Image (cartoon, rainbow, N blue to C red; front, top):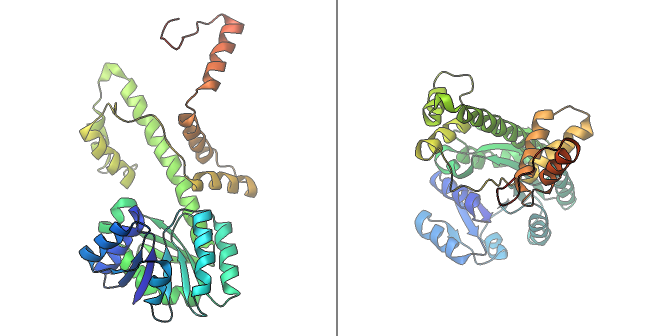
Length: 306
């Protein structure tokens, strides 16, 4: 099979590599021409000078896989891509789009006889070696056509990927996946900070996290990555205490509100990220001022004095 991969950044580039190594022909395009040239040289990817050139190198049914930022970049590319395609062709959005957008885009493309697949993609930078977890929303016909490609990209032909439902279901599943991820990360963060704070025990966090990786009920890939990081640096003094949030975390909380489902862990994990992003710290300054006003509690000034 052959497909076009549009967007060869951190995820798209490695996905193109894995597909090539799995025997799938890839026509690749990215605005960074040097990235295209490098992949063509290293992996035998077919280079394209534009999206139109990439489409022209495909045969029917043409498959174009997008790995672009969610929102306007993906929207604009799909709008520009549609006139280049014909009935029976397939567009795949493997980015982190809002599932409502995927439903709308799928319906719009269907009116023109073009298939659409929303693919929630997990695996990060490790997906090249380990395979990607792929959550697919599509019609049965589109999913069947895409099966060899999904099998090549997944950890194994029969696991790590699934056609989870109709158009929109893939990105919805990935959205909830990322919401859960927020909660897991926050839980590890709080627990490890408590361990570090018990100074009388002088606990070695690298030792503890490595211990938990074997036989513990909290063992996980997140724990594996955390243990490896702490093995090299437990103080993390070079890491700024700023944690961005991706769209899926916010969308998951909105979905919980829309459904009337209590999701306090996921919601609080998202809000803790907001706290880290508040560079002014105004809210905490106001809290300190209030405590001083009603109780005469000391206020610690910005210069460290009280």
